Length: 190
Image 1 (cartoon, rainbow, N blue to C red):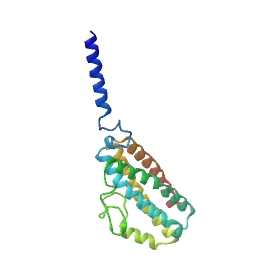
Image 2 (image 1 turned 45 degrees about the vertical axis):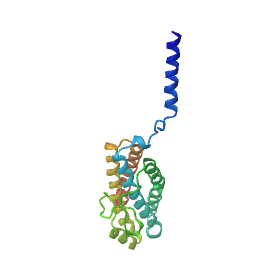
Image 3 (image 1 turned 135 degrees about the vertical axis):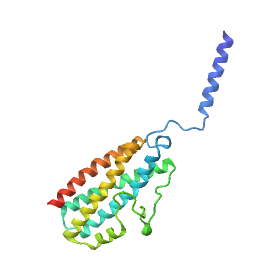
């Protein structure tokens, strides 16, 4: 009996030591290497340049717009920067490049505008040339389309993603941007 106990203790100790020296990392937290899928990667890779373009558009408002309500909305859109950094962090953790698309001028976006809602270079140049109420109307029209693209990407992530953190961000993006679309439509009517 004593011999069986001793062998059992040696076997248990061996298993524990083997487990302790294993090169495998501890159980992953949300947004880690093991908790994501291709839909999560695509969501982050596409939403980063999408958000970056929204920030670029929002930065135009103070110098070109005339409506304080549009300026207020643009200020809230500029708050997307932490979401960009969060998604960049996920991609780094996942061991994936931040984007698979680049465009002349340093813009990281799809050159053929395959991402829904992305503005073309011509759209952005036209917006840069506008001033006052014409700028406000053009900006609202373009930002509505831009937001609709983000909502579509967020819904795709919610339907097909696996990472809990990415899905939570997708839900926040969908909720916030749908509310902003309604607000922008109201501003266009008013």
